[in-house]
Image (tube, rainbow, N blue to C red; front, side, top):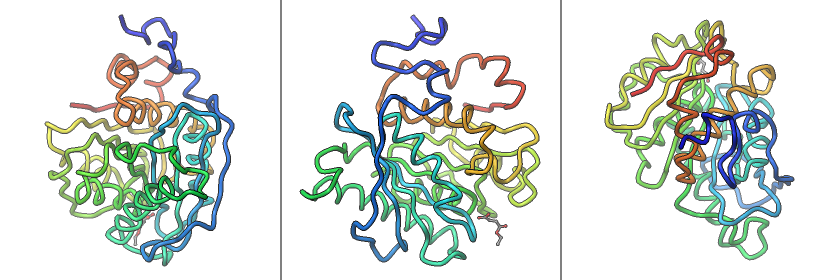
Length: 268
Ligand code: 9J3
């Protein structure tokens, strides 16, 4: 029985509609843990009173951008039961390769926080349930990290990624790519869609392109799209980080008409 066909949440799960908003958990955030050499600083968002352990996610901004351009994801994902590290790069102009290292260092930070007795995350995390996300050069970084550190990651969600001449045929972890049809900074025909096509067919992959969308569809400023993007990102995490098969239909089944008017989907 498909839990989503009726629009009802599976027991313990969230309905598609619930995934478009902040989730059931109250959240907190903190800073001031140990920052490694690979990134400048970060904020960790986490849920209260959640069934432990939870999965962890690291998020990188794009070229010249900061936490505040991306941190709606931290609050949104944490409210649905994830620990989320939103980072600032060492240099605003760091390349995707450096952002990949920053992202994986963020994953190491989450694991360290899970082991540090004074941390709010002490014994809250499943060290094996980790994902990377990022915008533009940070999305290129997420793809590079997925390729290089895939044995220690469970999923990747680059949004409007930027990485010229990319070949991601080495990625084996499930990868969801968001693109914007009218992105003039990282045109999908040279970036997001090419990245998607380079992923092996044996890798679980979905490409969602926002009709008329620009380079900033998934950043803080695009509040009108947060509901839909959050829903599909959360379904991806619930399926591939938490292993909850009840979300598969939301990703691969027929999309609701209202979503199809704003989004086109390609998948394998
Ligand atoms: O991270 C980004 O937004 C990449 C944009 C870009 O065109 O960088 C060129 C140097």
